[in-house]
Image (cartoon, rainbow, N blue to C red; front, side, top):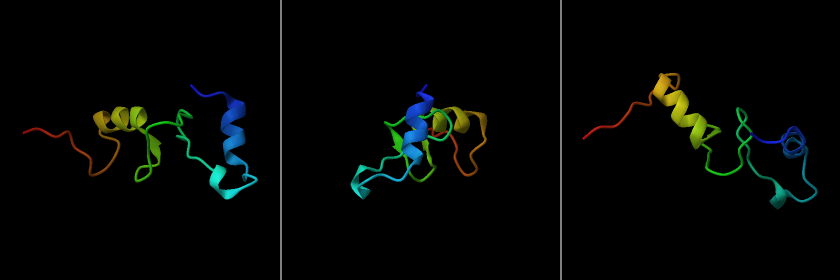
Length: 61
């Protein structure tokens, strides 16, 4: 779980545009962020298993 101060800091406009980074809005994680779904891999996997992300199904072959 990310610190509240770091989540707040990420929401502020950066001094330079290249300093901007993405955080998961659900847990605050920085790494393994999936832009298409706007969340980290941990939250994505959890919500996909629960069937809360439309169009995402567990693959099997």
